[in-house]
Image (cartoon, rainbow, N blue to C red; front, side):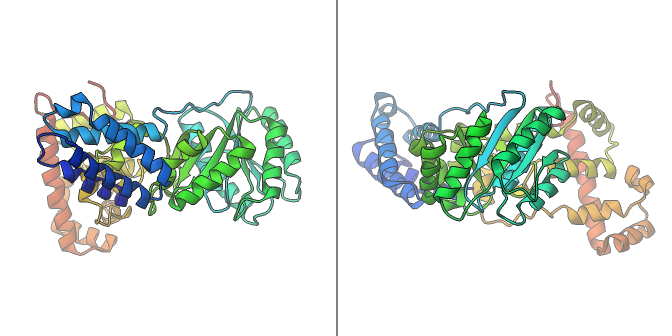
Length: 440
């Protein structure tokens, strides 16, 4: 995420490395490199200049001049300004009304339909809501089918009228259906076009007038940079939307959209999304994103993701098993499943401070655990619960069953034993670690 921008900003800060004081010369060089990095990330020149002017103004302040570590303080100034540029604080998401109505708009290909499914899943699992998704894209042949598949996948209701081309009547009928079936949130997936056109604007404006949504979310493909910002402005001039959603953050994202859109339309980014999985939707926190851009990680989000997946009672049981050295293959398999639910593996590791840079060129496949899972799933329930029972003949059978070489099975067994010992040692320490999600 924003790898190119992160590298160029890091390079800019090298102007201050080893400096005992900040002076006009090294400030000027650093600010010039920061501005160039922002422009290369497809940030509008005017925005980039105003940003670096504010950084320069703060950098020549008395506190920075007297600082012991000018480089670190410059990083902090840039982090604070990046956060402010992206909105400063978390934007509120309104789900008021009975039902609450959320209108989703954007260009074709921006990820509107996938986001609609993700938002429904988020509201159901994280907010305890009972959503109804509405297929209001009557032009793209596969739109209704796609939303239907997503709705079935996450277990939420969908409303569609395949033969009706009047989208206003469709959404009005959907509201009646929601009230009749006690759905407290209605999410409307509207049609997109390849480019902004008058017919599209009139249609989505008519839907807005007919249902008076509490939230109008404009979905932006984060990989499109400044073009996305220009499109957002055109939509906002007609729709006056309430917030922005950045999708495809797992792609080759330059950063221009994330950094420019709040400044341009004065509307907050409310959600960010990556990948196709229905649980890869996150509330947008400007400061956390600024930290990630600067390679500082995002440990807060990582902990929140872990807490969302771990049950405290089960975690306590697991801790007891580890302390007694009873951690087995089934426990290990269960933990792998929990980690996979947290999201993209490389993205998760990038949230750990200092790790993002180290793994930027490393290909970490989400299927990295498949070989281990195959080995464990080739065991009998008895073998999973009793690691010491694995005789050479059992290992040979497991290797054949998992499609692995016997040496791979033996290597995994050795690594598993080493991990067990390390976990036991850590949990026996006076300030020993606890399982994710547990309170002290």
